[in-house]
Amino acid sequence: MHDDEKAVRQLFESVHTAWNNADAEAFGDAFTEDADYVIFVGTHYRGRPTITQVHDVLWKKYLKGTRLVGHIVDLRFVTDDVAVLTSVGKIAKGRRGGGKPDKVQTFVAVKRDGRWRFTAFQNTKRRPLLEWISTRSDSRLAPNSTAPHAPADAAARAE
Image (cartoon, rainbow, N blue to C red; front, side, top):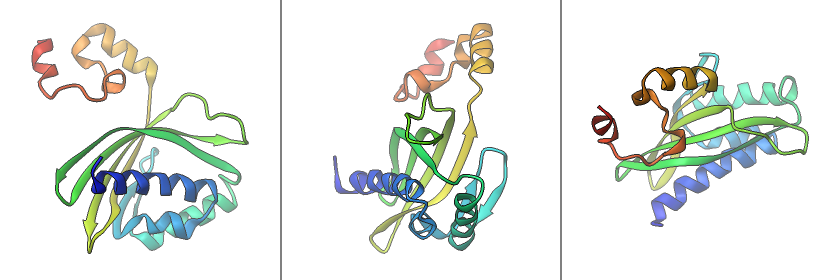
């Protein structure tokens, strides 16, 4: 694993650590000053200060005591200073395990002045029943969740 891959993976872990400690400043620090942050209900936040403030409110009220659980399913470098990270996760309450991940996230990381930060984030709620129904009607619609590293030409082979 090269240094940049290690740094992006550590950045992802820092987001989880900050969430689990309800540390809005550390959470916001993982994002660029002008980051875009879209949550699963479609709300769009722009900028590190807003991302920090929103999470501070969430952890004091609505998501108090929650933990963020999940893992990386794919990480690829688009250029030397841009990476796309795909993960699955779940917000868990209490100390017990988080259960099966119910969301898929896309992070875009950029390297500026030698430091990696996320500049875009998209969180989408999974709908396994709808995935199953669409897969049954046409196998080409199957999600990559069982094969996160499927070759780019897999769709062409399925036709």
